[in-house]
Image (cartoon, rainbow, N blue to C red; front, top):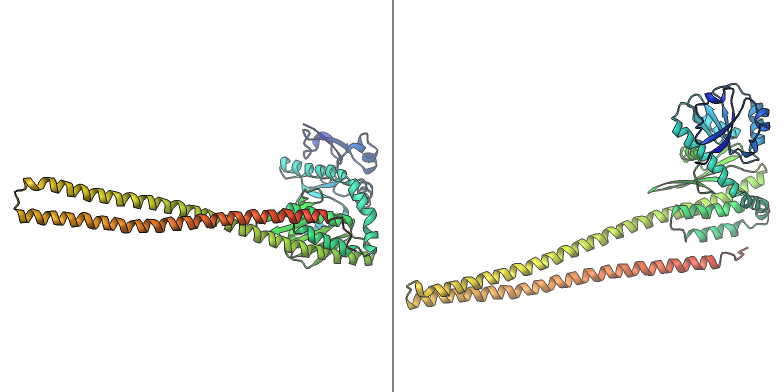
Length: 400
């Protein structure tokens, strides 16, 4: 199993660090900021962990040094605490620069999972570094040249070809990357909640913040971060600019994007609901057709058995009449009764054939309806593919 190198600032000895799984991580432990940045192998670390349990009195200067050094390198910083902190303190932790806050009393597996999540984020973000750098170089110049409306329109056009929340989220991040924004997104569908950032993964702490702040107004600002809420969608922007004009421009454009996201999330929910109803109706149609065919077969079988019983009874009576010692008048009466019984049973059977024809018409109509639904679904799928192809062909057209 591959092991990842992590840096740990702690006053405790290496063998006393109960939150570090040695099977997953190779720790580089130092007791001060200066020691950790000069330690051998520090350039290989994927994650920095600050052990506040062993040293609860680090000051703001220390945290600022950590933030200013590791944030530009894209290395996430995790704080280990001795007890559960409040929601307000979690916001403060994000403002200071921590990616996550972990309680040391949690199970080791859960701690390791959250730390591995931060490691994976660091690796994924490094892979996106070149793309993000290009977006940052062009973002604000693009907004100053009034190209935002064209970007937003292209975004709204692309959302119509999205079939699920994952595709919808990636289209959103493609657009905000052009603005140079670093975000976390939450989409709340009727069929589940999807949290993600540009690399497709979820940040646990930021997802928790978005869930708690979804009803705290349209905008919630703290430091360089801003949470924007609209309907079923919330987004956390991590790198809001200090310039007031750019700040307002980003808010306006982000709000437009969220309106489009919200409309598409609702449309996808309705489509999925209609799809489920369609599948239910198809299952019902198939079930009814199966039952009707069974009833038809049973009805036909019963009618034949009735005719066979009546005809057999008539033959038996006719065979026994000579041995019953009846006079001629009595024999004629019995034969007439038996003949009428056979004739009437045949007439009933003939009427039953008309009912059988009705069964056949009903079954045929149900099958035709099912085939029409299948053909309509195939036509709709072809139209969707054609629309997606048109969107791809026209994606490079400059609107403005």
